[in-house]
Image (cartoon, rainbow, N blue to C red; front, side, top):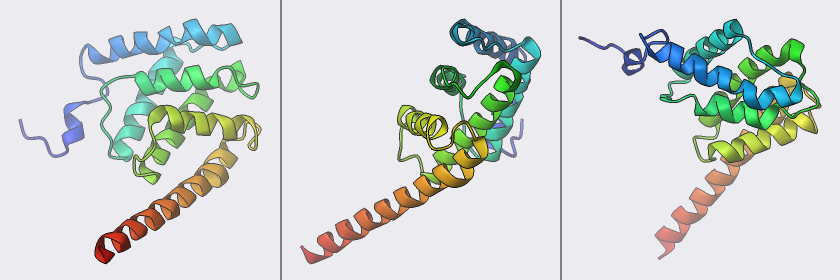
Length: 162
């Protein structure tokens, strides 16, 4: 078997992987239903498709559904998410999450990134996904990159001075 793209070895509909993952996604309903939010089987399949596409588009490899579960746990208590837009919101949050993992060059752990996203979403963005991605998170990533560059420059100067 010739694999042109390493990510092709994990296709979205590979045999038994999707049903297991769908069950894991639907298991998130146990937590979200406390907040009046539920994913249907078709919304769960769509979420898996979005996740797989986003991972591929951002050149990432994920072997578990853990990020989806973490996003549900972090965001389902939000007063800005309701049943009508729950599935769409989760899809967008997945996109923003993986976008930010790349933008921050993986310098922030998943839980910390989700805490930051949740704080912006619930406070300064008041539930606006557009503001979350295009204002708060991109601004945060720019600031983080500048701080990392300044730190790296200071370390480089220090090592040349020694």
